[in-house]
Image 1 (cartoon, rainbow, N blue to C red):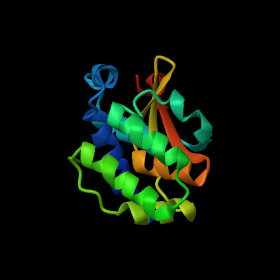
Image 2: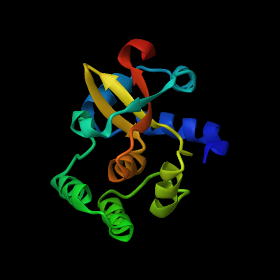
Image 3: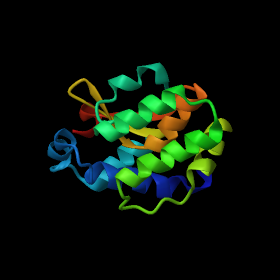
Image 4: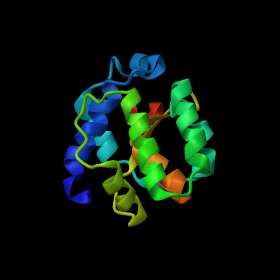
Length: 156
C-alpha cells in the first residue's frame, strides 16, 4: 500500500476538508490546503493504543456504527469481521472510491504495510479524518494503530 503515499496524503487532505463534523468543518474553513498537505507529509507516525478508541470523538458517529463496533469487539472470525465492515460501509456511501477491499485492508494491517491513519487533535479531542477501516482492523487484531496526528497548533 505504501507505494502510493502521495495519493493517500492527498486523500487525507480531501477528507479533512470534506469532514462532516461541525468542529472540524469550522476549524478547516480558513486553512490553506497546500499548507495542510505539507504538514501532513511532515508529521511523524506514532502508535495509538487501540484500547483508547473511545477517545476518538467521531469514530462511531451513529447508533448503527456503535452497534457494529460492539459486535466487532466480540467477533473472532475473520469472515464475520469482514461482513461487519461491509455492513458499516453500507451506512455511509463514500465520496472517494475505495481502492482496496476490506479484506485487503485487513491483510495490509496484519502485515504492518498500511498508510497511517490520520487524526486531528482539536480542543484536546481526537477526530478520525481518514482510516476508519484500518482503525477497525487494528481493533480486531488487537494491534496499536499507526497514526499521524495533526493538531490545531501545527495547522495554524
